[in-house]
Image (cartoon, rainbow over all chains, first blue to last red; front, side, top):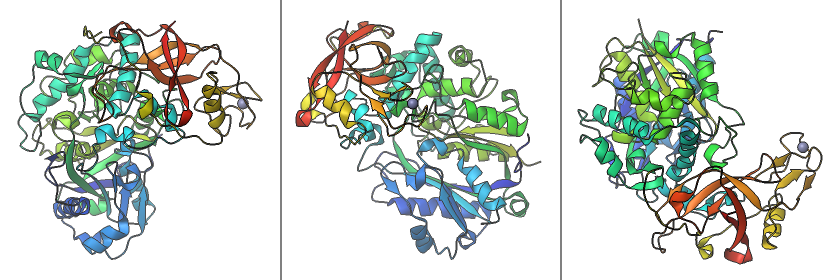
Length: 398
Length: 146
Ligand SMILES: [Zn+2]
C-alpha cells in the first residue's frame, strides 16, 4: 500500500554548525549551537525564523545524552511567536531518520507549516562513550552494568561477535566499512578524520571491545544540525529545490526491544540491527526495492552495525552482509549503492544521525561534495538501538 | 578470532559494583545473596523472563516463581574488554558474557566469565556460576568454564 503522505512534504532547508572534536565547542552553549543550526536552516530555505511553528524532535528532545532542549526556551531565544506542534520520538538515536515522519504528521494534520528538527551534541562534561557507566544503575540496568559493559561499543561488540559466529563475518568486512567511508571523507573540509587509511592500519588499531577496534567506533564530536520540513507545495515556492519525503517509518518489534541494553533477543534478531521491520515497511510504502536506492546514508555508530543494516534493508541476504561490503558494493567509486558518501559518523562527524539527513538533502539537490550522479532516491536510517529504530526514503523533486 | 593473547579474564572488582532493586527484582537478588541462582518464572504459564518485570509478557499474569536453577549456562555471545571501566582502577582484561541459563529456557543473563584466558572463550561453551561480593552486601553471579 502506497503511503498516504508520499511526497506530500519536503525538506526545504538544512543548516549546521561547524563540527568540533569532542569538547572543543566549549564555551559555546548547546542552545547557541541549536540556534545557529536552526537559523542557518531557515536561511537555506529562504524563510524567516519567525515562520517556524512546529518542532519534531527525536531522542526525546535530548541533545546527545546529557543535554535537552525545550521548545519554549528556543522560542524565547529565537523570537518564534507561536507553535502548533511540539513532539519527539522517544528513546535515542534510533529515531533519527523517523523524525521527518513526525514532521510530516504535524504538517498533514495542519498543526504546523514549518517544522524544525534539530540535533546537537556537546561532550565537555560527560563522554558519550562511557555514558552507561556514569551512574548507579537502575533496577533494570542492574542486570547489565555490573558486567562492565559500560559503553555502546562494548554492547555492540557482543552483537557483532554473534554475527561473526553465525555467518562467518570477518573483521575485513568491518574494515571495509571504515576504509570506504574514510575515502569519502578525505576531500571534505569539515570532516574530522581525513587521512587515508590502509587495511594494515585498521588491523593495528587497538581493540577496545574485541571484536571491535577503535576504528570501528564512531567519532566523538560536537556540533548541531537542523532541517525544516514543510508541505511540498510550499517548499516549491522557497529558495531551494525541495527534497521530498517519499516514505518514513519508525518502530520495531519486541524481539529487538531494548536491544543491547537487554541482550534477550532471539536469533536472528540478536545479530541484526533491528531494522528489518522498518525496511519492510519502507519498501511497502514506496513500492521501491533496495536496487532503486541511489545513495544510502546508514547510521554508523559502529562499523559492524552498518553491515547488519544492509542485510536488514535487503541490500543483500541475511548473513551475507560481510561478503557484500567486501565486494566493494558500498564504495562511492564503483559501488552498486554508495554508502555514507559524507564519510559518516566514523570519519566526518557524529551528531546522533543528523549529518546523514544533511548529506541526503545535498545529494538530492545535486550539490553534494561526493555527488552520486542523478541521485533520485536516498535511504536514511536511524541508529540500531533501543526502539524506536527508523528509516526514511527521500526523493529528488522532478 | 583476532589472534591477540589477552591473558586470564578477571572479575570486575566487586567493591566498585552497585546494584539497585525494585519490588519485582528484589527476590532475584535476595536469592543471589544466598548463592542461589534463580530466574523470574511466570506462576501461571511457566514462561521465564529476565530481568524480572511486573507482568508475564506471555499471559500478563503477575504470579511469579523463583525456582532454584542448576547454576550452569551456555555462552551465547561475549566481548573482550581491556580498559578499566573505573578511573581509579588500572586497566585489566575482563570478558562480559551473555548466557542462556540452564533450567530457564528463554532467560538470559549478562555476566562475566573469569579464570581462563580471554582468547580461549568460545560461543557455545558450558559455564558454571560462582559469586562476586559487591557493594552493600549483595552478591553478583559470574561464571567460570564448567
Ligand atoms: Zn505467563
